[in-house]
Length: 231
Image (cartoon, rainbow, N blue to C red; front, side, top):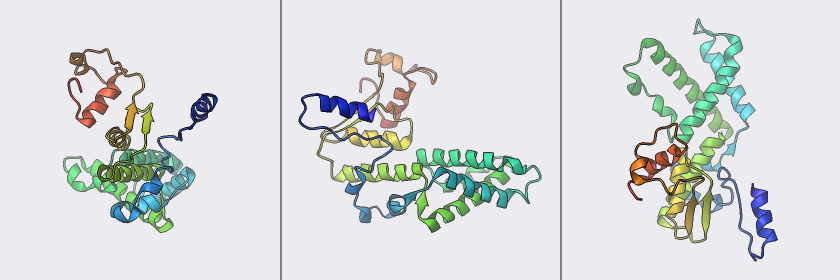
């Protein structure tokens, strides 16, 4: 897609070719971030992105450490599958703007003892995993992306980006992405182009759309942005 867009501009009569990049790769914008003003984001902004296989192996090692000798239901052959599941959970936490502290016991007081015990084990794995990451100065790709979008959104709130910038083709299903899209849409020359938005649907119909409807992603985005009615 990137090559196609660039080739179309090159074949046209436009004297300037815009810079095109994937939404998940904000390296073209991150030099704008004043790192010294982003105290709690310095670590994920400056850290390198870890390789997926590196993450899976470390999580598997921690799973074996905390579960093999303490859980009678633990099966050694399942450790790598558990690591893959934990990696997905970590990405979900990052994409939802949550931290490992979300697993504090106060949120799970009403759970059965078995689930409470599992949550405590998860917390231990997450803490050890976080310590391991910080020691190597690495983060997951999703954590890096969440930090970059948060830093740019905060920066542009006080110092709006003045050049034209467009986000095309995203529904903002991830919280970090939807927040960044809102920040871009608020810029002087910023805009968001939504893919397949039904502009002819009656405003009264939007409130009746269920999760299986193809336009539901836009309803979710509007709710995140607190847009209602004819907005």
